[in-house]
Structure formats: C-alpha cells, structure tokens
Image 1: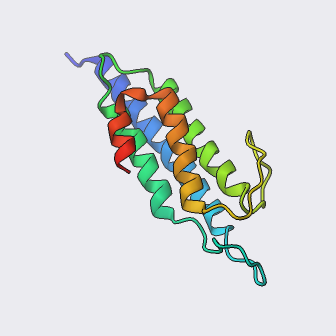
Image 2: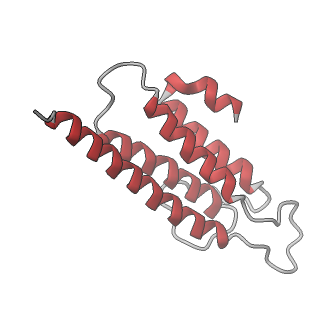
Amino acid sequence: MKNLNHDRNFSGRAMVKNISVGFTLLLLFVLGSCQKISGENTPFNEPASPAVVLAWNEIATQAFLHFPEQPAPPPMIESRIYAMVNVAMHDALNNIKAKYRTYALKAPDKNADPDAAVAQAAYDILIAETPWYKNKYDSL
C-alpha cells in the first residue's frame, strides 16, 4: 500500500521548490535593473551578481533538507521563509537603485555594494528563522 503522507509531503516539497524558483527568477529580473547609471560616481556601479542570489537560495533550501528535528516544518512554513529571504534581497537591491516599490526596508544607500547588501539581507533572515544552519551561512 502506498504511503499517502509520504506522497503528500513530497509533492509539498516540490511545490515549495517551485515557489522558491519563482521568487528567484523574480529577483534575478530585479537584479538586471541594477545596472550602472551613466554619470554616476559611486564606488559600486556594477549590478549585483545573480550567483549571490542563487547561492543564498540554495543554502536556504539546504537548511531545510538538513532540518535537525523530524518531521521537518510543513511546506507553507518553508515557503514563507523563502519568500522572506527573497523579499529581503529585493529590498536591499532596490534601496541601492530604486526601481520598484519596496516591501519592508526603506533605507536608501546609493553607495552600498549590491552583492554585500544581498548577502547581508539573506543572512539576517536565515539566522533569525533557521539558526541551526548558521555555520553554513557563515561559510558563504
């Protein structure tokens, strides 16, 4: 007989992964908007690297794969944390070069390093929500 809980849990995890990919694609679109504005003399005119966003999304996924207690949190909790991480990264970038409406953070800093802003935003959310994986976050 098929284990229905296992199938439901698996499909829920697949759904969360799809949601995470959707947020990542949205954020990569925003990254493209952080291009250099001609005539701007700030130290960080380069856009944020998509690799930084992808790395933080991947480590967030790994944190849930290595959840210290069983059962792991339900997919909706997991997807909420993915959303928080991606919104934080979006707002961090959008405060460097405003193009879209921010969701939570309103602290413009035109001289900030986009990669550092993305990394710090993701790190802060993940430490608050998934502290058991701190050693891995610190290694990025």
